[in-house]
Structure formats: structure tokens, C-alpha cells
Amino acid sequence: MTLRPFGISILCALTLPSLALAAPPEDDGGAGVSIGADASLDADDGSAEADGDASADADGEAAADEPATDEPAQSTDGDKKPWIKRWAPERNMLEVGIYGGVLLPTPNHELFMPDLGLPEQGFKPLGAVAPDLGARVGYYPLRFFGVEAEGGVMPASLRDEDRGALLYTVRGHLVGQLGLWSITPFVLVGAGGLGVSSPREALGKDIDPALHFGGGAKFYINQYLMLRLDIRDVVSYKSGVENVFVSHSPEILLGLSFTLRPKKDEPRPEPKPAPSDRDGDGFIDSEDTCPDEAETFNEYQDEDGCPESDRDGDGMWDDQDTCPDEAETFNEYQDEDGCPESDRDGDGLWDEQDSCPDEPETSNGYQDEDGCPDEVPKEVQDFTGAIKGITFDTNKDTIRKSSIKILDKAVKVLSDNPEIRIKISGHTDSKGDRDHNLDLSSRRAEAVKKYLVEHGIKESRMTTAGYGPDKPIDTNDTKAGRAYNRRIEFEIIKRSGS
Image (cartoon, helix red, strand yellow):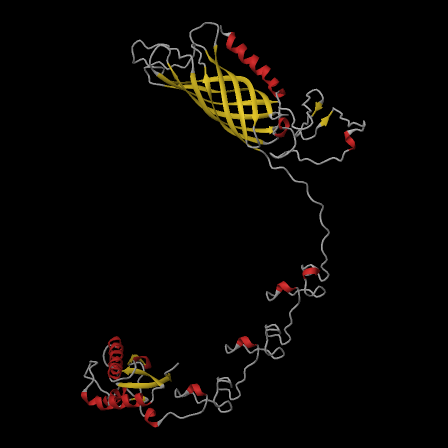
């Protein structure tokens, strides 16, 4: 009884290679596939084939006289190579697939984890048939040999009770195959674990080591798809029988796999002769505007293959330089034209900007942008420096009424000369705390500015500062000197439009 499943598995594994002979006939010529006359055994990749059949035409001339055609070892769907050889396995193939089938569990299994807390719990045989579902991955370094790993589940039931028991397996095996045709017979042997997961009232949870062996056939549909038939025997521990330690569970599987084949190296074309580059600048002569003059590679027109010239050495190429023989002065004025700028009177204004290029500007804060010498008007001069008559309440920034007349004159002068811009600074004597005096002088300068703004002078024309006792113009040891030091100053700082 124990040898019957084992014998069936061995018989199937040995007889399945005959499926390789079931090839469809060729479409043209009617020539069949002769196993005896075809020696196509290659230790590396099976691409070399020596056909022992000789075919002759009607005149008796050998077909070898016909011109030979080169065919790649790996064909495509449109190739004329017969299907039986078209999708034969190759080296370094990867197979990923799924399978389904049936497992015929042995009734004398060892998958049992007793629970001593349950009364009358004993060995319970499984039902005769269980569905078998799983996935596999395989790698074939050689056409005739590979390794695979599988994982699967088999939802089973107890034979004598209405209870389920989920069988599962994780296993690996070695595969030997006759990898010469699109129908490939194989045998395998491997090991793994066979386990059960069920309620403790059934079999509990257990896993045992298991061996498996068998055979089958692969049917390569095209370059990427393959059908597969497996017939196996799963060998595991046997329960309850003396002197016989193993039991057999036959397994029949049908699978679908995706095949990943290595990319074929295409024949390398003959290298073309190197194109000519007479000036050695990396541009071939047919694309070089100046094939006998090397490109300078200066990030300017490097693509034309011609050298650039800079006769005046100012860093601007001659075809960009308005003055190619006069160096640019790079003074932040029209530096892009490549021409030097002139300032004959040396007043800092270039002659093109200077209304008086031969007379230097006086730079007195009055009409300095025209480049011509000039004098500050007298009414403006009267309101520069310390302004007499602007006074404040003691220790405050409140302007006294007596100062209004002077401030109104300042408003008129600033209104009549809109091009000037002034700085208003406040000063104190040295009596009291310095920080307090700095704050007081700043607030007094702001008070004057506020008055001028309120009377029509643009705030943008004025700045303020408070220096406290830090810039005396007289001694602080006398009452008169301290009075001089308490002051407001106007200073022309620059033209209003700057």
C-alpha cells in the first residue's frame, strides 16, 4: 500500500520526456523534427546546431549551395525557426509564476499538535483531496539546470469530522531539464516544510520537514509565457505504524509562469575610421569652420571651431569690441562697448556725461550732476552750519515760538532750491547724562524735520541725526560756550535726485 503512490510518481517523471516529441509540423516543406538526426547539444547556450539530414533539389545538387542566412539564436514571433525550437530555454533565465492543483494528503500524516487540556483528543486523518494553490520563482543559470523556491496553501478538511485544516508548504528544489525544445521535460528533487494551521480541537498547529520529488513538462507559449505541469510525491513522517517512518502524498499541479530571458548581444558593427581633425581641436574637419586653426575654447562661440582674437587684451573679443585696439577701462560706465572712457577734467564724470568736460565740478552738493563749476547760492549758504535762532524748551524737544521765523525762512530756501538735500543734526552741551542728551538731540532734530515737512518740504530730502555732547564747537566750561554748543545744524549732503 505504501509503494503505490511512490511508483506512480517515478513512472510519470520518467515517461514525461516523450512529450518533447509532440512538435507541430513545419509550415513549409513538410520536414519534421528528427531527434535522431539532429545533434544540437551545446554546453553553453545550445545556439550551435548541426543538422545531420541532407536535402537535395531535383537536379541532385546539395542545398548547401544555396546562400546561407544569419539567424540570431533567440528568435522573435515572426521568425521562421520551427516553434519546437523557437522558445527553448536559455542560460540565466528567470521564471516567476503561480500554480494550482490538488494534493492527495496521506491518511497517516504526522501533522498533529495535541492539546492536553482537551478530553479525548487523538490523531485525526485528513480528507482524501485538498486544493493546492501557490507561487514559485526559479533561476536557471544553465539551460539544463536550475533552482526554484515555492510557497503554497492547501485548504483541507478532516476525514471524520466537519472541521477544516489549512495545510501550507515552503520548499525549494533542484531542477534538471532537457532544455532543447519549446516543450521541455524536467525532473526535480527538493525539501522544505509541510505544516498545518487549524483549531486546537482539530489538529492544532504543527510543521514537519518534508521531501518531494517528481517531474513534469514546460510548454513555452512565447518569449514571456509558459505553461507547466508537475506530478510529485511529497514524503513526510508517518504516524502510528512501526518500522515504516514515511508517508506519501501525491501532488498534481498546473501552473502559468512569466519568463525573463537575458538580452542577446547584437553583433558589433565594424568600427568606422576616425574622422579627420587636422587642427586637433575636437571638431571634425567637415564640421569645423576653421579646420586648420584650433578653437580657443573660451566659452565664446566655441561651437564654430575657430580661434577668437582680443588685440587690445581687455577680455572682449574683437568682433564684440567697438574699439578692438583700445582697451576698455572697466569703470562701471559703458563697460560693455569695449572702449575706454575719458575724463579730461578729472572730476569723476566721464566726458560724455560732463557738460563742462574741461572744467571740473566743484562737488559742493549743489548741481553736482552737471559737471560744471558753480557756487552754492548765498541764501543756501546762510542756512548751512549752525542755525542761530532755533531754540527749544529746557530739556525738551518742543520748538519755541521765537524759532518760527527762522524755520519759515528755511522752508523758503529749501522750496526755492529743490535740488538740494540736507542733513539736520541736533547737539547739546555736556551737562547731564550723555545717553539722555543723545536722545534729546535726536528728538530735537526730528522736531525740526517735522516742521519743515508740515510746511511743504518733502521728507525724502532730509535726514536727521543726534550727536548729543559729542561734537562741541565751544567750551562747555562757560555758560556762553554751552549755549553755543546747544544748536541745530543744516548740512547739504547731496543733490535731491540722487
